[in-house]
Structure formats: C-alpha cells, structure tokens
Amino acid sequence: MTIPTDDLNAVSDTFTPDAPDAPDALLRSVCFDRAPLTIEDIVGIASGSARVELSTDPVFLAAITRGADFLDRLLREDGTIYGVTTGYGDSCTVNVPAELVAELPHHLYTYHGCGLGEHFTPAQTRAILAVRLASLSKGYSGVSVGLLEQITRLLKEDLLPLIPAEGSVGASGDLTPLSYLAAVLCGEREVWRDGVKVPAAEALAAVGMTPLRLRPKEGLAIMNGTAVMTALACLAYDRAEYLVRIATRITAMSSFALDGNAHHFDEALFAVKPHVGQQQVAAWLRQDLPAPEAPRNEQRLQDRYSIRCAPHVIGVLADALTWMRQSIENELNSANDNPIIDGENERVLHGGHFYGGHIAFAMDSMKNAVANVADLLDRQMALLVDSRYNHGLPPNLSGAEGPRASINHGLKALQISASAWTAEALKLTMPASVFSRSTECHNQDKVSMGTIAARDCLRVLQLTEQVIAALLISVRQGVWLRCRVDATAKPQENLEGMLEALAKDIEVIKEDRMLEPDLRLLLVRINSKAWDLYA
Image 1 (cartoon, one colour):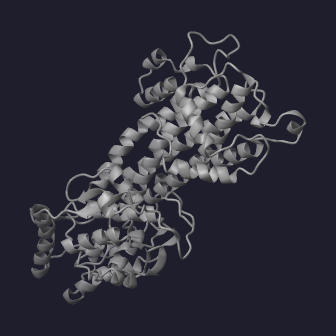
Image 2: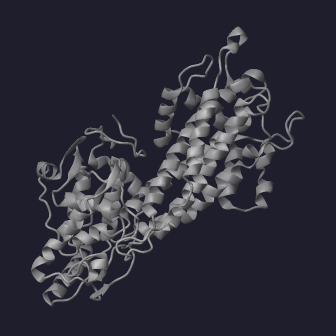
Image 3: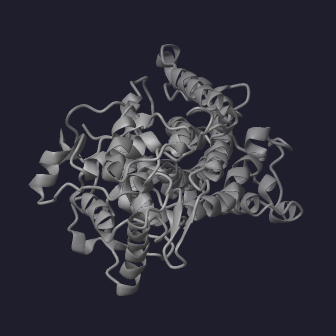
C-alpha cells in the first residue's frame, strides 16, 4: 500500500515508502546551518527529492556549542533556569534538586506520550524533523551538536518516528507530537524502518546509532516549538500554489466547453483592478483562450459568475500566497522554543516564541481561500452538466448517442460527489485559531491552535483536489463534446496539450462506467504535479 503524502488516513503495520530510490549523490543537498531555508527545501526533504546535510563549518559548530557550554556553566554555578532546574509550565515554581536535573528531560517526553489519531505520513514526518532541525540549528536553544547530528541521521537513514497527529494546542509549541521525536532519539517508542513498524531501539541499532541521553534543556528544546504546524504549512503551501494553476487551466477548459466569452479576461479590464495574483490568473486565461475581435452573436454578453469571476476567486488565493510564504518561512527560520539561550551574550531569555499564531492565521486563511476555489469549480461543473446552461451540450455530459442515450447518465453521480466534497471543504473553513482553550492550570491560557488549523487546511486541500479530479474528467468530456457539436470549435494550443495529456489517463465517456479508478489516478497526477502549467 502506498501512502499518499497528503493523507492523514490510518496506516497499517507496513507501508511502501514514498521516497524515491535515487542515490543520495543525485539528490539536491539542503544544508542546515544558520542560513535561511525555503518552503521548497522542506518540501524536497519531505518528498525524498533532497537530502539533508548538517554544516561542518567551524563557526557554525562553535555557535551551537557556545550555547550548550553556557548552560553547563550556569548549572555548575547553581543558576535557576526554567525547564532545566525547574518543573515545566505551571510547575516552574518547583525547584528540581541538582541530582535529578539529568532525569527531567526524560520525564518531559515520557508524560507527553499521549497523542492520538492517525499517524503523520512519512512525508509529513520528514518535514517535521527537518523543520525542528532548522530551528535548533539557529543556535539559540542551548543544545549540543550531537543532538543535531542525531536528528540529521534519522533523516538520512529514513527512520521516521510514529507521531500521532492529534494532541497539540499549538502553544507551548507542539509538545505532544514532538515528544515522539524526542523519545525516538533516545531509543524509545516506534519508527518506520524500510516500510515496517519497529521499536526505535532496534531501528537505531540496525544503522549503528546510539540512543541519546538528553542534556538538561534538550528535551524542552526539541518539544517546545512550532515544528509540526510549520512543517504541515510548508506542505500545504506547496499544494496550494499548484492548485492556483490547475484551477485556472480547468476554468479555461470549462469556458471553452461552455462556449464562453473570452473577453471577460481582457488585459485592459484587469488593469483597473490591480491585484497582482488576480491579474496573473487573467493573463493565464488569456493564454488559454485567445479572444476574437468580438464575441459571436450567439454567445452570452456576460457569462455566469463561476466563469466570469474566476480570476477574482482564484486570485484571492494567488495573492494571499505571497504573505503566507513570508509568515511560513519566517517561522521556519526562527528559534521558537523557550527559554532562548543567547550563548554569545550569556543571557537566558524567557518568552513565548513557541506560540504558533502566525502559522494558525496563515492556515486558517489558506483553507478559506482554497475551499472557495473548490466551490468555484463545483459551480462550473454544475453548469457543464446542466443542459439548460451548457450551451448545447448533452445532459450530464453523456457521450452516448441514439437509443443508448436513454440508459446512460454520464456525470450525474460525479457531480453529486464533487458537491459533497465541496460541502465538506466549506464546512472545515471555521477558523481553528478562535477556539483557544485555557490549559495546564491556566499557564497556557491563550493558545494558537496552529496545528489543528494546519491539519484542517491539509484536509481542505485534499477535498479540493478531489473536486479538481472530478472537474478534469468533466472538462475533458465537455471539450470533446463541444468539438463534436460544433465543428468550428478548436482548442488553443495550451488546451490541446492538456487534452492530450489527460487522454493518456482518461477515456472519454461514451458509456457509463465506474469512475473511481480514474479519479484516484488523477489524484496521483495532481499530487505529483504531472502537468507543467504556465511555465
């Protein structure tokens, strides 16, 4: 069973790894040091198309070591350090005896081992490990070089902790899910190794790794941050960016199939409302639908909103992606645990950088914009299958002719399914961030819910991609039927190329058939970005 990189469905005790089998030497290298990383770096590591390298630069290694050495000196001098010589959270007033300080990190990840729900997929887990490594590599967490090397080795060996997806409120960071990373580093709990679920101690031994004994702040440094929500946000951004392009291409094919009015996307028209993303979508539609000098007499003067206003709907997501990238990459490149250890200036700074508010807002906003695109495409499909509105195409886009037309129902059921997926996506747009709960004896009395927002966003993306798969079948069928009923109709080169690509996977529907295999294949194509759109 291959686990889709976008799915939070349950996994069994075995799976087929989703990373490519290319030798490491052929993969792009992502170096972890204090330099900024990009969303694409994390996506590459998650998919297995990029390999991880920890910097060996002496300046970088010295910066990491400086923070750990500073903590060691504070401990020798009997300094009070939150989470090192005190309990955690509301228990910060509890002083830990010196002889028990070394045990505290073990207790932290142990009592947080209470996650539930399905496990994160292999791709999501790689992203989580990479994002946590990125934050710790900034040099403000007081961890050792050995800890960074251990996380790096997990990624290189593809030993992936089994991390339950549910249990984080997104402030004091992703404590419960990240406890599973901390435990695995110490040889506890379970990992996926070579597609099989095995005890972590066994997996580490198999590749010659020694379980860590965490230093005094290292448990807190691993767990007290925003790595899970940020990792999921990177993956969501990557999918949303492609969704903008494929939704635009589908709109062009819908407009052609409906004999729509391409003048709706005129450059001069969009110059007077200068949202950059909206203008880009309109420009792509102009590439796909060159407008004649004037609409034909039989064309509607104004197409219905789901066609005419498509740039205004898709453009919202396109424009929002700009600030979403900034928020996600800022979080990715931040030190976001507590306390911050400034080894250079020898200061311990207590704050709240584990709070995931920026990611929560980005994910709540993204799922709203994405679900609106699903709704737009669902409305386009409703026009395509309805003979009252599809400008001469057969009811339900059935390809059957003659007497057999009476027993064929075309895309009737597919339209129902697309509507169901759309409704579920819209239902999930309630912002998670407004459901803050006071937890942990009112110490964590305002929390971000960023991880729930990110998980919701991935589910909305999945549902929207299912709608897209349904629309790809619909527009392929609609364009074929338009050309059948109108001998003068000829798709522009971009659309012709897309039709040829779709034809390799989807037969036109002349007789009713089960469409689930087609839909599942199209989802694979969508997730792998099989079509190079608007290069």
